[in-house]
Amino acid sequence: MASEQDITSQLAGLGFRLRDLRANRGWTLEELAERTGLSKPFLSRLEAGDRQPSIAAVLTLARAFSVSVGAMFESVAPVDACVVIRGDKVPVRRNEGLTYAPLSSNARFANLQPMKLIVSHRRKGDEQYQHDGEEWVYVLSGRLRVSVAGVPHDLDPGDSAHFDSRQPHRLTALGGRDAELILVACPVPESEYDFPRSIRQHRAIR
Image 1 (cartoon, helix red, strand yellow):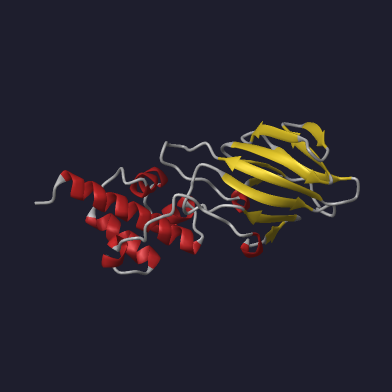
Image 2: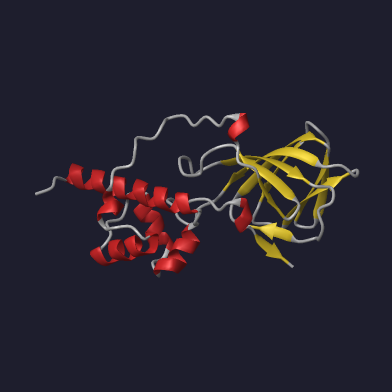
């Protein structure tokens, strides 16, 4: 009969494996919930190793990831205590006038989401965004307007702003040139085991 320690280890291993599979596919918890019909809080607790899944849940997850049931329990390589991101290997992504480069690993650390961000002065539209959590920005070059809840705040290089991202907000480059900054998002989880959303999942307010 498996000991309590063995069961805890297996649950933790399944959680790491589940998060690894999800991260490799670029899925959010919301997307996985939609694909499986399992609730987001349930999936969040599975990833945290705090919930024991039923056989039906494991079958459903295996089917969603197109892997065998056994693969769901394959051991994941030990994770490093420190994640180093080399400057020449940072993946650059572009979306809606924003160019951003993640500066850490969401699959390894879930509480902070740092990135280098360039806001194009040619960015069009006036959409605002809101999502769970907080954001902190530090301007490296250019001038940046941070509008939060309808109030604009103009920042110069060396200035920073920290705001509640549940409030409608938008970043705008000023002065006819791009603004380069460091942005750190810290999502507020819906449960203590929830994980963050990436910048592409912000909900636009039109």
